[in-house]
Image: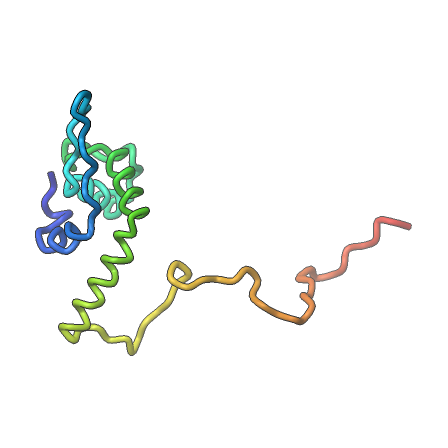
Amino acid sequence: MRADLVPDDLWERVAPLLPPAPERRHRHPGRLRVPDRAALTGVMYVLRTGVAWRDVPAETVGCSGVTAWRRLRDWTEAGVWPRLHAALLTELRRADLLDLEHCAVDGSHVRALKGGITSAPRQSTAPVPAPSTTS
């Protein structure tokens, strides 16, 4: 597994936020679950390199791209990323390293109303009205 993709300090922040692994069945337990750190390494590999999930080298990363993708999906549904974001912001505030003097907001954090609320009629964006097809 590539340790440089998930250094110890990052893992120490993320690990407590991850949901617990489901219990294994006793009669037909199936394969052993890939460790969460290996799955996070797979996710980081895709983010850093931009490769497709199917092209993740399982030997290097420690899990297949499909496994990393499924774990990312599960963690997203469990709300891991907003909690990690809040924890990192709290840590930056405590260290007095958070400067909101210059900041940006993108659409992933702010609800965008479809078309906005307006009482004015919408004007056409066409350069010339279309000719009538009825004569």
